[in-house]
Amino acid sequence: MINGVTNKVNIDEYIMNALREDITSEDVTTNAIMPNPCAGKADLICKEDGIICGLEVFKRTFELLDDTASFEAYVKDGDAVTKGQLMGVIKGDIRALLSGERTALNYLQRMSGIATFTRELAKELEGCHTKLLDTRKTTPNMRPFEKYAVKVGGGNNHRYNLSDGILIKDNHIGAAGSITKAVAMARDYAPFVRKIEVEVETLEQLDEAIAAGADIIMLDNMDNATMTEAVKRVAGKAQTECSGNVTKERLAEIAKIGVDFVSSGALTHSAPIMDISLKNLVPTE
Image 1 (cartoon, one colour):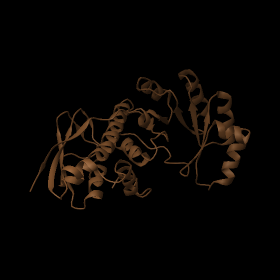
Image 2 (spheres, helix red, strand yellow):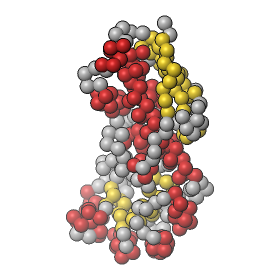
Image 3 (tube, rainbow, N blue to C red):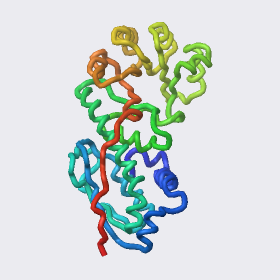
Image 4 (cartoon, rainbow, N blue to C red):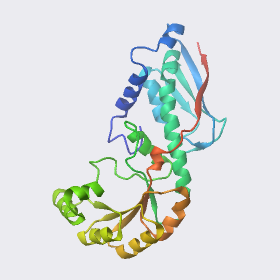
């Protein structure tokens, strides 16, 4: 259902948990005014310009409440949409349309907001060697949806979770005693095909990470001058990633320095939602 993600998680379970959060016993308002089944339809309308994302999740939310529900989409994930645009029509039992509306829109608005924000930042790196990455700074129980939205917006996914890759950060270094020891232990423990990334904050730590044989070195919160020197010292011995204090305004400058990757937690933790509404609900029988 979500390209590149369905093999990792059970999306239905995530959506069902969201629905359970909103409907603990019943939708008392809907049950009061609509006691019997009744077919209906409603329009999905965009209320601001942006990049749409999450249409399959939107549809699936209603399908889990009503197996007769159907969604006719007039756009697809990744499309640029404009204020006032009719993006599709959802059909099904009116009770399911009413009860599932907020959960379905929550997913769609959040995912579209992330895709829109990611597209804005990705444009700053067009034609550059540097790739834009997300992080694990995601909303709890929203990671598969948010990371998918980053991809739709033109970004790339960093490791999906703690099982997905080795990233030795400052507290790991503190626990191990040094970068050298941490890399050696990771190399001994992990399969030989697994890359090892190390976060460094100073040029001294950078030199140690290079000597230890790190595959990827994360340059954390470095100013442009220090980062430039760091890339020069790495000299192709490892891949480099810029992280920390990454803003839209800095992206072009960072790319010129020559890092391989730039990661931004803001893609998922600071993207505003995109305003989308479900309107004009009417019976069809």
